[in-house]
Image 1 (cartoon, rainbow, N blue to C red):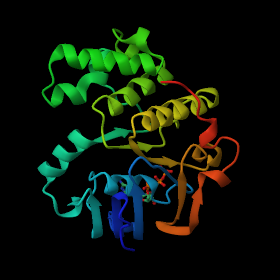
Image 2: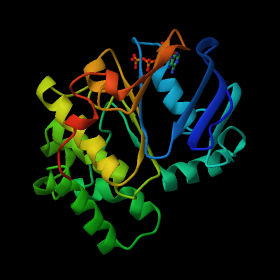
Image 3: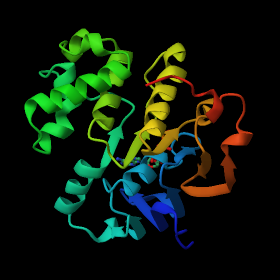
Length: 245
Ligand SMILES: Nc1ncnc2c1ncn2[C@@H]1O[C@H](COP(=O)(O)OP(=O)(O)OP(=O)(O)O)[C@@H](O)[C@H]1O
């Protein structure tokens, strides 16, 4: 696979092993600027590993990952970490907030770590918490929040520094069914309005994958099938994402 000119992020021939067992085998993918790409497949098919490699958290044993003409696969660990802090956001399936910090302090962390002033960081964090409907939780610590509220704080933290790409690894996994679609739409609507590229791993919930522009499928660490554009993913597709942020 050769990167298309409009690809912001692309990988070619990725192989990754966890303790000697193959988790990705010869996976290639390109992601366009502003695109919401979902990665679907059954448990253990390699979705998290692929997001790990694309985001520079993991280094493939073979293959290449390029972001904006920067070869992530050959960068030093510190350079990858710097790039991740500056340009990427990460949302995991658990919020993983720092318990001793308030919600706004957690959400502001990427800005504070980048050296932003306290006041500006607080303002930006509170704006995102408001957009994500948890503005009234800003002064509370994670222990006083519901899981769905904590996950919204984690989403605010992933978006607060206007990253170029957000990686979301099963971001709705710990939520109740009723919260899932709303949290996912909030994330994707926010990303679209700020032209943030999103790579989203989801399990078997293909209805959730309907918020994406394009879907790729992994099975046993390999890409299978053809890409699925949003138009064919059903009534929860792009047009349905109408939450205002
Ligand atoms: N830290 C690890 N150590 C050993 N094996 C691992 C590790 N992480 C993942 N694996 C294995 O690698 C394969 C791919 O895992 P991965 O988590 O990437 O898949 P996934 O599609 O994200 O799964 P899930 O839907 O369960 O999150 C699986 O067989 C998994 O058991």
